[in-house]
Amino acid sequence: MDDAVRWAVHELRQLCPEPEMGTRTIAMQMVRSGIQISRRSVQRILRETKPKKSRKTKKRWPKLNQAKGVEPDHLLTPSTPNHTWHMDIMTFRVLWTTYSAVAILDGATRKLLCLRAYRNKALDSQQMVQLVMTTTKKHGVPANLITDHGVQFHN
Image (cartoon, rainbow, N blue to C red):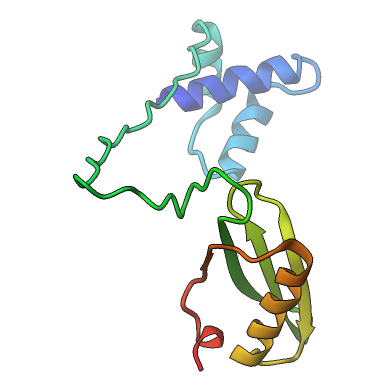
């Protein structure tokens, strides 16, 4: 058996003491969740010591070397407010109605500067320009605006 299965069996036993949940019930619950295990295996696992929860190590990518003579723009991780804004559109359905939500975030503070929802509407570039203009009137002009190059951002 895998250590994760052993750990789950011991956790179930700890959460539910003997009278409420026996080994047959533990096996049945684990089979329902997609883990093939028998009552005898649950009994055998419970006689063993509880395994430690394993930690997966994160793969660390090597840092990229900066180009010589070029200063980075820090577009993805700006250090000052209003340096970079991020703008994105999400379309979702609730029952039979389609909604579109447009959000503008400040890259440094992660503050939500603008959030608009539209119902049953295909958004175009004019609406996006108008939304950015109203946001700049309220929060100032950003140095950069990052979008996902969607259809709404083209003329």
